[in-house]
Amino acid sequence: MQVTKESIIGDVLDADFNVAPFFLEIGMHCLGCPASRGESIEEACSVHGTDPDALVEKLNAYFESKK
Image (tube, rainbow, N blue to C red):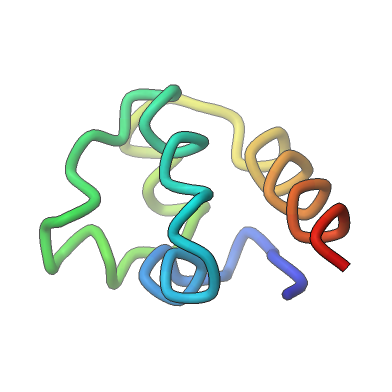
């Protein structure tokens, strides 16, 4: 999976739920909320005051290591 800032959080979690800790460690504790699952990574990072590029980089490194 290739993750971008426009990727929807629910889609990323559905691809591999093992990435949930990446979201939790930056303060996104609402992963079970239907509204949060429909947000893009960029939208969620904006709300939580975190860098979306850093999260995308970490997620892509994880998915790349799974190949």
